[in-house]
Length: 72
Image (cartoon, rainbow, N blue to C red; front, side, top):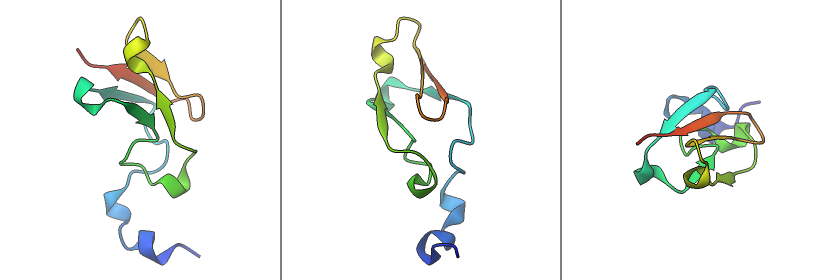
């Protein structure tokens, strides 16, 4: 049975881990996965990713494999 509170608002959320590559801006830091636009109940625990320390501006989520790229 779906949760009635989230079922009413499905258009507000993306499916969990639907994207494999996501571009983020510095204004969106600190970066966490899943992002605020993903329904947390359908995904993995929140993990903060230090993308600003990555030499090539890319980092992969250890849970879902989504690759985040930092936009210049």
